[in-house]
Image (cartoon, rainbow, N blue to C red; front, side, top):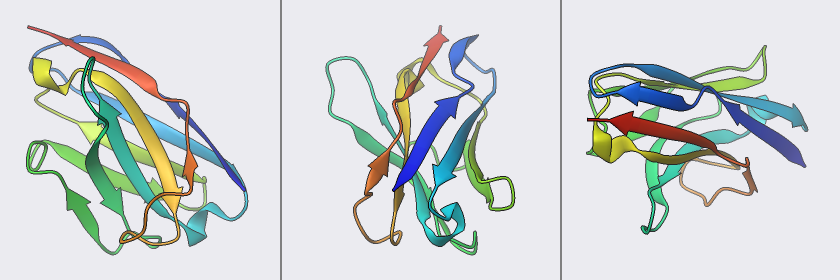
Length: 119
């Protein structure tokens, strides 16, 4: 079992930056792929980014490529999502999730953190 807690969300202006954190506890965080998803009001949850257990490979949704960067620190048991050049359409609840591989569906989810980007 892995417990995940997101933090770092908030209200920002378009063009600003935010860094989300995902603190993990429980089983060895370093053995899991880390994913970030988001859900906008009235929309389905969508994939944002993911990173392999050792950080060697990263993947992004086209909508955030070049603006967002996913990373992780397995010593600190924490994952990150650096979000730059934020747009109003980036508004939503952001969830981190852990899974056995980047190609597999996540097994564990955090409770989410709200990001609101004002125009």
